[in-house]
Every structure is written in C-alpha cells, then in structure tokens.
Length: 404
Image 1 (cartoon, rainbow, N blue to C red):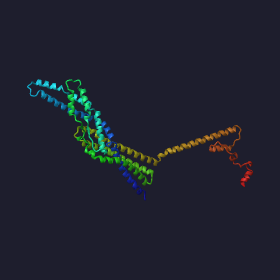
Image 2 (image 1 turned 135 degrees about the vertical axis):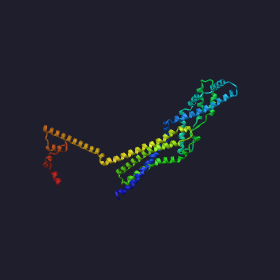
Image 3 (image 1 turned 90 degrees about the horizontal axis):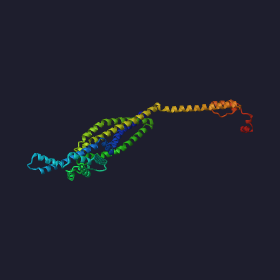
Image 4 (image 1 turned 135 degrees about the horizontal axis):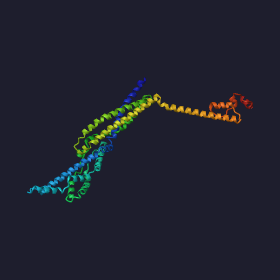
C-alpha cells in the first residue's frame, strides 16, 4: 500500500477532529457563560441591571402609592366641599388643607426608596436567576419570578414613620394602612410571574449540552490517538497534522464567534419583548450574557489556533535542525572542557619533570613523553618508554616456569 493510501484515514480523522473541536468550543463557551448562573449574575451586575430594575420597582411602587393617596384626597375633598355653596377661594383653602394631611410625591419616593433598596432588589433577582437555572438544569419544574415586596412591608412602614416624623399634620398610621393596602405582596418580572415556557422547553437541550461538554474533549483525544496509530506511530507526523487541525478549528471558531455574536445578540434583543417593565430593564443584561458567550468562543478559538501554530512550528523547527543547535553547543563545550583538563594535566606533568631534573632525581624522557601524550602525571616504566627488553632481574625461575 502506498504512503498516500495509508494517510487517507489520517486525513479523515483530521477532518472529524476539526468538527469536534468546533462543537467543543461552542459547548464549552455556553457552559462557562450563558448556562452558568454565577456568570449571569456577575454579568448583570456589570451591566447595572440591578440598579435599572431597582429604579423600575421603586417607580412602580411610588406610582401605586401616589394613586392611592390621590384617591384618598379626592374622597376627602368630596366630603368637605360636596355641594356646598362656597367661594372658589374657600374651596382652594380646603384643598390645600387636605393636601397638607398627606405626604407629597417626594416624600412618597423617599420612604419607598429607603425600603426597596438596590441591595434588596439584587437579592430578589439573584434568587430568580437561580430559579431559572434550576429549571433549565431539570432540578425543579417551575418557580416564581418576581420581586417579593411584601417581605419589605415592615421596612416600608418604618420608613414611612422616619420620613414623616417631622410633619405632625400627617397621620402616619393612616398612611401606613393606605400603603399596605395597595402594595402588592409581589411584583412580577415575567408574565404571570412564572418561568417562561421557552426556558422549560430548553431543559432537555441544556442537559444534552452539559453531557457533550464532557464527551467532546474525550472524543478529541481518541481522534488524536487514531491519527497517531494510522500514521504508523509517527510522533512528528501526528504533531504536524494535529497542529494544523487545531489551527484550522481555532480560526473557524473565532470567525463564528465574531460574526455570529452580532446576529445572536440582535435576535436576543428582539425576542425580549415581554410586557413587564422589570423584564425590559433586564434586557441589556441578558443581551450582554449572550454576547459574552460569543466573545468566549472567539477567545477559545484564538487559543486553539495558537496551540496548533506552536505544534506546527515545533515540528518544522525540529525538521530543519533548529532544535539541535543547543545540543551541538553543549557538545562543543564538553570538548572544550576536556581539552582544558588535558592541558592542565600536561602542565602538571611538565612541572613534575622539571622539578625532578633540578633536584637531581632520576628522570625518564619516556615518562615525560607519555605525560605529554596523554596528559597523565603518573610515572611510567623507563624500560618500556625506551623500548628496551626487560632486565635479567625480571627473568628467572619464575619466568622459566611461566614459559613452561
């Protein structure tokens, strides 16, 4: 079988790996952003969503309170003026007198905003977000999506007393009763205050994405192992093909995230047309969550492309021999160190020879020559250095016995 024929499975596996990496990029980004409750809560805070929703909740509450108080004023005017034949000036005096018995709109806003704080609304929204994600993940079937103003009724009552304490003409307990009567126990964020049906329908899809987020990385590793096997267990070839695959998948993923982000955020903004003013105030935050998901796809794509580029670059450098330069340098340094050691041994042998000569000790030219040759300062046999035969003292019965 030719080499090109043997590489066909590698090409096919590389193509499948590109698809798997693209899908893994999307599922991983979704699980890190749009499908992550903590990320959504943090993003909404960064987009000032809690402050926007707080302002809407406060405005709606003030409107209801003001409407109740105006109705009460009108009832009082009707009781005191009625069909009495009095002058317009007297009528105006009675109206002003009745107005002074009730808080004006600025005072109403003060005791409402002191009780319905941004911290309280943020806590309610955080609870709602976790409820939505619990439904998405199949942990519960439904939940209430609302701001539970009734939980703050005691704070509202106390805030009314604090705001009106310097105005003796206003009956504080009467105002407390009016506000409590008209303040709803909860203020819905979604229609009917329940989890939207679209969220409930997406539960199975989210479950599948959570599973695929674990499956795709494992499949990618299996495909890389297959490329290694069909390439004849060639590490260099596998690294090159794997690097190219990662680079292609990374570039495609970054392009999908960049161009798809604008389309997705536009579609999300158009889809969020709920009647609730509170939900409308959350629109920018929800759009920001979707945008962050596609931004994460771009970032992860670029990381894949960089990893692939590095792998291809390492293989190219290894083939060109650029990575061997350090080994050659180290080998040359070792040779240089060995030469320095030999020179040092030679100098020691020379000094020992000169010292013996000056002190009148017997020296051997052969010994110096041997030191000069191998750098050793160990003495050698004079007779062996001169090429002479062993003396008679070294021959004797022992030698004859050896010969025998």
